[in-house]
Length: 126
Image 1: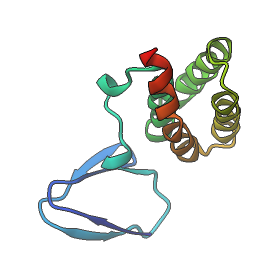
Image 2 (image 1 turned 30 degrees about the horizontal axis):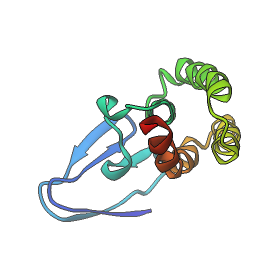
Image 3 (image 1 turned 180 degrees about the vertical axis):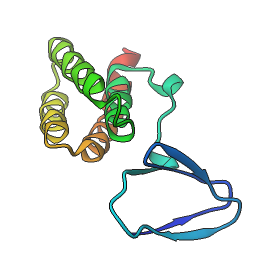
C-alpha cells in the first residue's frame, strides 16, 4: 500500500499519529490499520446523529482496546436512530453500515455514513 502525504498532513496508523514535516510517500509493508487525516473526525465535529455514528465507527477502527465498547455503543445508537429517521435512504444506509461494522469493515461504514451527511444536515436544519 502506497500513501502520499503533504507537508503537515497527519496519518493515524495502529493508534499512533504521524505527521509529515515535508511531502513524503510511505509504503506500508504489512497489514496495518490506518486513517488519513481527511477521513478523521474530531469529537467536536460530531454535531449530528449520523456524524456521531461516524465518530463511533472511527473509534472502532482505530482503537482496538476500546472496540468492543464502541461496537456496543454503535449498535445502541443505531437502534435509536431507526426510531428517529424516516428517510428510506438513511435507513438503508444505517442497515448497510451495521452490516459493514459487523463484518469488521468500519472504514467502509464510515464512507457510507459520510455520503449521508447532506441528508442529515437538511433534516437537522429543519
